[in-house]
Image 1 (tube, rainbow, N blue to C red):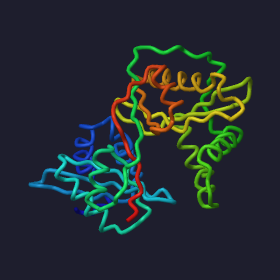
Image 2: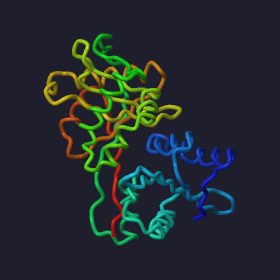
Image 3: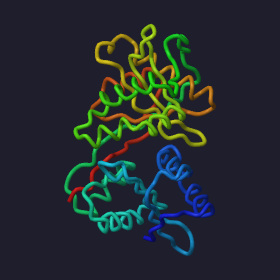
Length: 270
């Protein structure tokens, strides 16, 4: 595969054309390419046609790595490139069946993790009370709340991880993209935000409610508010959750999300 660090606009358009063929499963990679969030891109071609790509983003504690292949025969190309990188901090994200096949090429003898992908396909949603949902603003008070929520949600184990989630520039970027609070009176008691945004989809992520407010409908209110904001913008909400998170899966399906496939986030440790 050819390593590319500075992608031309023409090359970027060609890559995006490939990724949009699987838009619903490639939202992160599309968003990364559109906003230059990645560190390096590896591309394989056959007669000038792109046949596979590997996108690596430095997340501090890991190299978040996504991929696209034109056909399954290209998976071994992805595996060889991962092997050449020789780094145990590679977190590979992709459709579970493809991640599992890459692991087999690399002789990693374990089952790939399982997340379920959901898309909201119901025509309407119960509009939430405007007093219960509030869009976060770029000010000291809201940034402080978000830092507290991120700490509880991500549970950093090192000072470097803590500094990363407290990074003001990243939080301001999240707010600009779309970050919402669920309220109890004037107090934010939970939050959710937009992750990757593409032409047709918005990924909903980092949904969190304070422990003492759980089981009281705040999570449902928050999710309905996020869905409503997506639909108002003309985009379809999507999200992912762990196979083991039965409570969340039950809520998503009850509200109107439909499971569309399995996804994996797998460290490539050999």
